[in-house]
Image 1: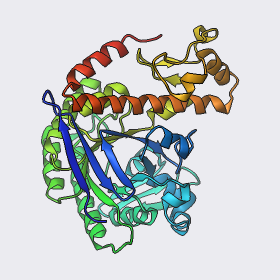
Image 2: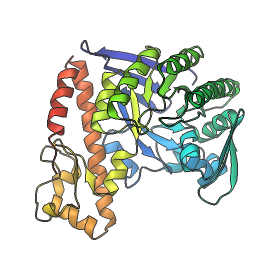
Image 3: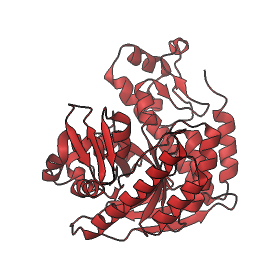
Length: 377
């Protein structure tokens, strides 16, 4: 499958928000869509059946971690990542670039790729633009991301420009390799916009990657520690630069405030470890804002996490019980909290799609955030 089919179904007249459908190798994805992160070929504390029950049909896998362990050969011999993990729906895999830049104790960036030392055993490896396409093709990824150079806020402009240029050069090489492959199972290659927090660099990046006519495009380098107003301004600016006829993917966001802002800017796909990671640390979403289940005030609180939530956790368990599980360090605590957090986000995204379809998204966003900002603690 070489051609990705993306259809915009509805546009909200009050903003850039839209609903759509992306046809991929393992089914059609309704957008906007939140992708839970399955770093090691599993969404932590969740069974595949649980994800399906929540309506999830696209998750994210991490190329860096899976390349190091269990390794490309194991996954390839298993018949690809879908068979290896028993997941019959879509998988987007990132390039591993972010992890190289954030986890590796040693890295050397050159024009033909990046060398790094494994955070697991210290062994040395090299990722190239062509190599990450080979790896993700062996995985059988439905959507694959190219190698890019991630940068942090506040770096010198010259460094940001160099990283943007290198990211585009790597994308050209990745695209060439992707077009050369004659694989029986061919995923879709998205381009990544970089440019740090410089509008002219982001404009140049967008123009260069759009010229490559790829199936979809991602915005990288946002939600990396900058203040929310800066994130918001660069998100809207960046999203407007990408082709309207292609899916737009904002990498690494997963809280209600950021999701709502992304949708308003016209984003179709987003992912983040936040809902699952914070659940394992006893922080859960409610319509009145997040709460920490370890708080003493919940010791005798026999209401569900959220009275309006109809997930399995909220139907069957109380805050007091969940607090007890966390204090006792029981595994079930992470399972129940994770299920709730993903159910909450999936429900939010479904409500967003409905609001956009009815032309009511700006009102929905304002009403949701007014309540959510009230807080629990």
